[in-house]
Length: 328
Picture 1 (cartoon, helix red, strand yellow):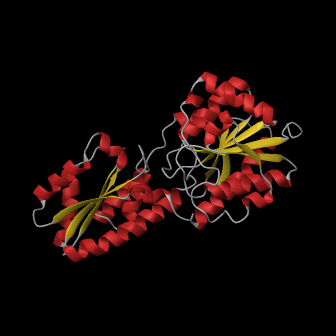
Picture 2 (cartoon, one colour):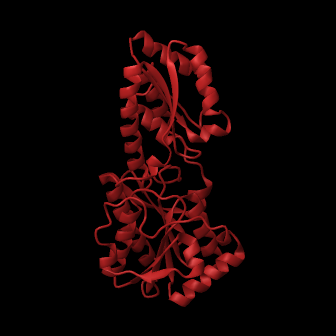
Picture 3 (tube, helix red, strand yellow):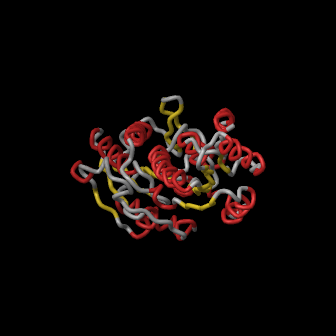
């Protein structure tokens, strides 16, 4: 297999995540180290169809490890979801002489890589790039630590104004259908409660946590609300319910939004992305294909695409218990 891998393509797809540039840098440098050509594919799978491709050298990835976003740009491509679209993408790979592909993204991106590899027998390796931390088989994903730190910094600032005005803030955070950002953000900020997609919210219990804080003379309260719960509970309606329950508090809603996607990646995300990027090329040279590179107990692991995208990553019950104890 080592002799067959002569040129590796790399792309970023789906939502951007801090640390993607560090991963691009690592893949590029690892390829050059092993004497393999590397070609950068711009705008994700869309660029693979339209041929927006450029060969990368060391200088192309100089001074990018600290930058947020992705220098390769990213997009969502409906055409690639069709067999005809993937056939065009494969034609581009053949034309460019690319005989292996590294994809950085979340479950939608990995699903695309899985379909391409299955239909055209091309080795594909995925790196978990998503702030949601929702991919099965890896302890953490590229971008998650940075997003969590952004949430912590924002909520700390909200706490300042909440305390000054004796307010209750409901803060919506990202995470899609996973509550890792909300749960760990609650612990990191000392928030009174969180509403998670994985657990049916007991609003009376949440109200009790808030009431406990008020009895301890706390002058503010904060509840983190995972965006994945919006399908069942409108955040504005939840806020109205809390206004009725706590008329003495001025209840406000703050939606952090795309602040959570941006910013320079933390040291943890830079190191994670660098390790996974190097491991991706090692995996190809070992003859691995159709696997996501992950980190479990600080060890590099290979997770088959089918498990990474089809198995749900469970929320840690001990962490939930710790949050409830700290809030009680």
